[in-house]
Length: 244
Image 1: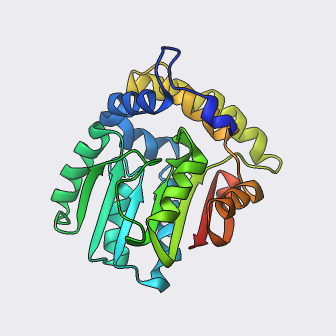
Image 2: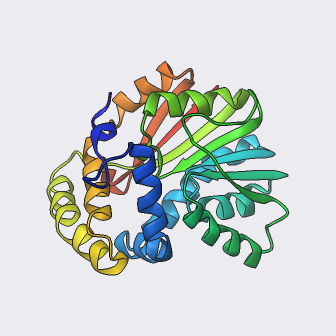
């Protein structure tokens, strides 16, 4: 078991998956605004880099895991122009906002949203040309199972692209990020989202989540090959990529 799997959003009883679902349903109305403000809109650039990795492969069917409100899915549809893109998430509250955004963009013929447990996907083996995830896999109740499922539904030779928040490893960004993530992020998140626990939970999972070379080893254990990573913005975010 990895460190972040032991961390739950709330102190109440219940499995992690159910608690994460409840948390994201609760913060869904303010999630987009907080995401962009807390990252100074840099998160948009991180998504572009992750999608840019897939561009040479021209995937026609995509699965976006932990799709949330669909920002990554919408950008991927615009940049990659696939025939089909499925956004999967456990939070209906987040996806309800995503559906409205997709309809407003005129992409509802390409992008669909489906409620899925990302550690037990309902799709047949070898369904998608590419699988993506942005800022969501650290919330998996079982990271190994979630990644193994992402590998299972990917076609042989298909590609994985992930962006995830990480802790910087070098001075002074490591120290600055620690201060920011333990003061500004949880306090501002609490004020805007009205959830006293959500953004403290998110900070804790960033710190506990395996990163860099360790994450590459975990991807390889899940069945991926040619796995690698690239740190972005001084290590605040990391892009992981791999092939089935």
